[in-house]
Amino acid sequence: MFSKRLEVLSKYICPYKQFADIGCDHGYLIIESIINNEVEFAYGIDNKKGPLNNAKNNMVKFNIPEDKYKLVLTSGLKDLPQDIKCVVIAGMGTDNIKTIISSSFDKLSNIDRIITDSHRNLGDLRSFMANLNYSIVNEEILLEDNKYYEIIVFEKSLTPVIYSSDEIEFGPILLQKKNEIFISKWENELVKLQDIYDKCSSKSVLEKIERIKKILWKLVV
Image 1: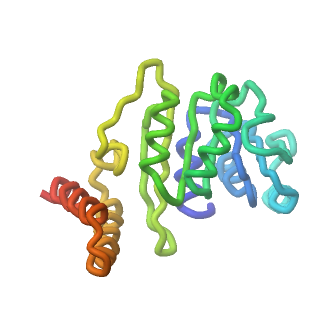
Image 2: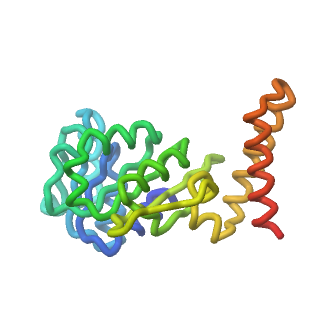
């Protein structure tokens, strides 16, 4: 109904029938999930009144029954009810996602699935979540409006979560899927890094270039 990105985020909420959208903004993910993915109840959480007012107006606009959602003015996970097992933290950078989670470690005992859509530093996010014993059960990369989006679905694990350095950097499931969009993202990144290296001859940049070339070679042969 809305963007492909919201559609994919909503899809991965299944099989959970309730979820919380952290930083709900306009509320479109909640609307998409209730209308198209049989979500029975959603919490829309934001730390600003403006986005919550926008979300409320959109709920009315799309005729979402009031008993299907609750909009809460609060920060992150700190006031999350215990019965919410799935949360979405999307549309922000890895540092913000880590801050939200780090501020409420006690809430993780109740949360089985965390779905993220970070703008940058995906390797850092994967490593952080692995250290919290959340494994990656799915990943999807999208290209919308000339921007790459990587949606990662983390699920609580009963055993230690260990990934290789390549899996941390590039994504264990994305490496398996060999998605054309994934390949194009890293080809574009390679061009940018090569331009940087041509200007400064940085050893670390050269190492990153060689690493990306190695991964791309594996994917296209």
